[in-house]
Length: 88
Image (tube, rainbow, N blue to C red; front, side):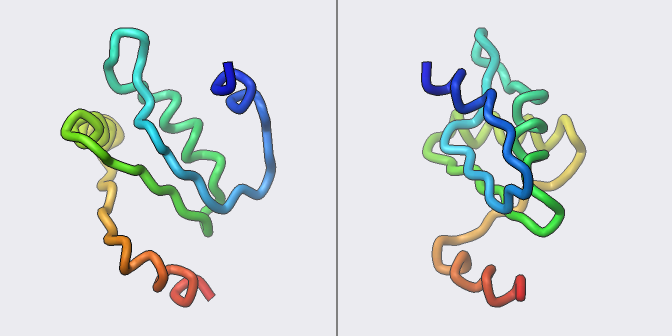
C-alpha cells in the first residue's frame, strides 16, 4: 500500500534517489520503465544510488544496465562522503 502512495507523489527538483529495492515486474523480471521513472526524478546534478544486497539485485541491476546500454558505476561507502565536495 505504501508503495502505491509514494509512487504517485510528484516532486520537482529531486537531487537524490535511493533504490532500496531494484524494481521488478509481477513475474520478478527487471522493470525497466519503473527504473527509468525513478532515476528520471533526479536532475542532471543529482545522484541515484542502487542498494545491492544480494546476487539477485546485482543481476537485476546488470540487466537494467545492459538494457539501457549505459554503465552503472559502483561506489564504496567511504567514497560517498567525497561526492558533496566534488559537487560544489
